[in-house]
Length: 459
Image (tube, rainbow, N blue to C red):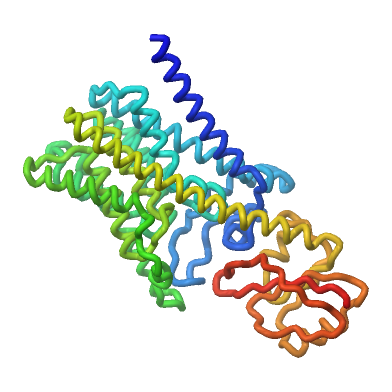
């Protein structure tokens, strides 16, 4: 008994250590980075109006009005506290998703009369936590955490409704589904699939079941109609995801491989028995989502975070329902291998995000005691600089040709140093008064705008 208690204590301690490490990494060196962090999230955190995603036609037809809607909650706080509170809000969402997953596990035990071993719960919790955590938690611009919360809420309430048939769970499951649908273009797919499988294989006499499943299907149809209307109204006739071609393949996306594997196994079982469980519905929903993301050439693990939610719930049920020890060991080996791969992926995501954070901080430090010259129309930088970067002495140069810009550069004070940022302007700075030092900060583009940064020091 003492040994068992010690093992449980060590497992809990190990899990707490992991969560503390994740929290420390998310909070350390937090900064809004020069990409979608500023363009989308910071843009409306500092705007007191209620925000909906409004960049519908920027890079192809987008229709996800609720993508960053949850960040409106930060607006209840004072301007000066919003920056500080943002990483804590991200962590809060991460911990809420963990708590919801634990509630789901407990309901799986309760409704299916299963006794899930403590160490099994810890193992599945670890599997749930590790996938893509640094990518979706270190960059503000990723909305996957909130999408995951909506999916977990849907699973929680759908499962409760399925076993109790109570109207309140019916309503909460439907609301969670609707909110999630409008957070990203592909989010209607898993709910649509659950509606289809539920309608085909649920009790035909259960009117409540038929109603909810029909509403899930209707939700997907309505979204598709609205998306088509948005697409036709856009000046860009490119579908957003298709204009991001995949060049590296899908070797790293183990969630995709895992969800396909178990869908094939359960699909084969279904064709033999003609029976399908609630948790098979979740699995097939996750599989459908993963297949669509694959078709859309999206090759990073975090894109499959939603599939990971459905897969994790299915595996908790399936692992504790089967009695074949060899099969259980096989599942443990497969999941352990995936955890190992997730850890490697997280390590590289951490290095990349941390590198960008440090570069952003270096950029801000380089602007101290220097004037900043910003070329190009950058409304976000201009409006929110005081909250995001607190850079003094910015000269905004807009709507000028290269000759006019060069004349301004030649007339600069030769006794001062400058940080020079060009946005979408391709020219060579020729000036005999300053030494131009390329400043390797922007290692990526901001949308379609190529960004170059220089430090100009008097000769």
